[in-house]
Image 1 (tube, protein in one colour):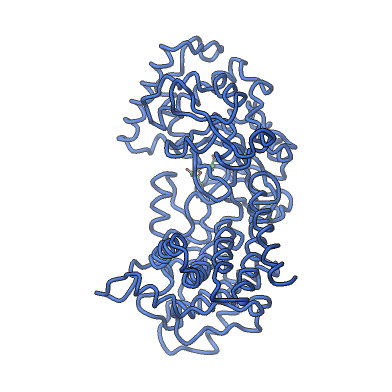
Image 2 (tube, helix red, strand yellow):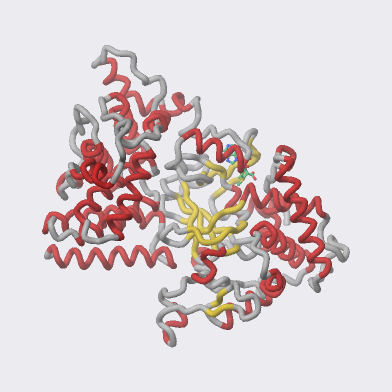
Length: 562
Ligand SMILES: C[S@@+](CC[C@H](N)C(=O)[O-])C[C@H]1O[C@@H](n2cnc3c(N)ncnc32)[C@H](O)[C@@H]1O
């Protein structure tokens, strides 16, 4: 396996790998990639490790969830049940086939480590075994093919195991700049893994290995590489469940405003385009939550991935890139001088990061309790169906931004454009004008649109949902959260689609709201579907969620007499 094979593999997906001075390599589109399409799939180098808290919930082999539709086994058991390995009592399987795959593949080598819950230790052991098996030829495509959870339609240009292992060997581990304390820890783990493998019956018979596991230094390298390139896998609801190494997916660089997203179908990673991507454009995913404030994002990226983010949202150079799309706003400003020094030195996404800074929620000295929050959200007026259908000629910002006026302004500015499928540049133009208005219009103190406010709102929203009966309030808070998400995340981010689905259920349950609330629920379902069809698609486990939204929508439509 060589770099030429990798280039061919990427090319068959319309992608190219180019050298980059700062990022080492970048994945660039070679042909147009439509939003919602699968850019590429990536297989794990070894079985992803399910978090201890989630082990009893998922089959370790196929990752299907306990209690959900049993799929193939539905004839005998409509709801999936899991059985525990009787030896280690730690791992769960949905049937004998899955257990046999696991036992032959990896489980028998980690079953004896039952008293040890150390992700690095286990991951390193699994990586070493996968690489050795590939080298010695005992890991064949047919014997490892595979967990049965793959969506075959994603595998037109299938990634071979040799490709997976080759790409892993090319990834960066940043050992030379890693913290000495961390390296010392890795060395201890590497030594333990090596000794354990030496004492086990696992045979190292490849030419490269010459009868023994890799050296401690090589194992430390594997761990460094794992840490700079690993992923937390998640289910269709975005709940994280496992940690894994997906080398091909790890080739994509980071952006805080990504044009692609990582999803999972069973154990296969699926990289999907969130927007239309033009030839020559870099395809980027996000390594961190885009809702996190700038300083924190940059610190996280520096600490774990060793780089200073210069993406369009973080870069100080960003003015140049987005200058054109800001021309309109610039013209408006010169026509209507505000008479004061503005903070408009930076534009676009940089304004966003200034807007969401701030740790305060509530006036100084005042206790932020349920009563206070209820008052804050109580004034929100839920948008009427008609107002979300079409983009107004010009959406005027209010004279003062409160939580209520912010919610209404953002929803009316952006939702119609998403529903109508507006081109990205027009959407971005609208977004930047909105940021400008939020930055220059007076607002309540503290700002109603910081991530701190969003965090409080989210926990209040969840409390209202858990306790039922508070549907009108939950719907209002949920609408505010939607406005915050729209302000922060890319428009087809699955988080927005999933939130709209929850909000639609809340609105549907709101008896006080009557028919108006049912209409609003329908609007939220339309928005949810528009987004989830891009991020989740319409097949596999993720597609099942889209079907669930569609089914709910039919019920709502029946109520509305459609
Ligand atoms: C998951 S890898 C991405 C693929 C990597 N560029 C390569 O060629 O192997 C993560 C590493 O890529 C680099 N990287 C990713 N995104 C970057 C960005 N936006 N700016 C600078 N470096 C980046 C960093 O060195 C990071 O540790």
